[in-house]
Image (cartoon, rainbow, N blue to C red; front, top):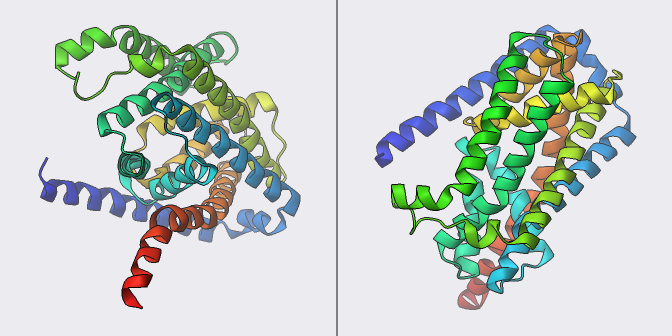
Length: 313
């Protein structure tokens, strides 16, 4: 793909995100009475949601910190935690989770780890989470989730396909590497088949998966709607599945519409569910913008500015 084609695609995706954002804004404006509830959110719930995000990024950061020890690279707190917040902040601004590349480049340049190793490590610690989501989603949709709409049948197929596809990729990786000549690009066996790294990643993803339904529950609680934890778990499963199709920056508009549509299947009004999703995104931004900006300054700007000071004096 040429640079011109990339610019066209990125411009289109960003324009689409802006259009969805404007559409959501107009919808909110037309339904002001429903969205008046946002003024009455209790500060305690806001603080609880922020704390959920803080803990979530701890788990996410640890999945990337621990494997680097295998290469004798020991990240400080502001690196392993800060890189996650910076990457996710840029994921809200760039298409197709483009902010993740910032973390790759930092480890590559600052820690002198080859990019192929960084990619191998990142893929290896991501796979346990994908496998966990696939297995959990397959079992839950099979035994606990009722057929509320055709979407749930599609969801069941998706989770089963995710489980089977990930398993084939993991255990057939050596064959795939040889078949597609990817040996120079990545090699997951060094990290994925390390028992300590696998268990660390798996436990961190379990923590993140447990936090996600609580965030959904608190988002609805913030606007005065009490939903059973079983429903918040099912909604969170669907939202996690939709994250695999994140093409637009931060899935702006898509996440909100998915939440609103799925919540309708449980008898929750479209506007109410949309408001709950907007509350969740607003509080995420409340956390990410100050933290992401701070860590970006510390990791990427602070050192470079200090180097320039002697030159100008």
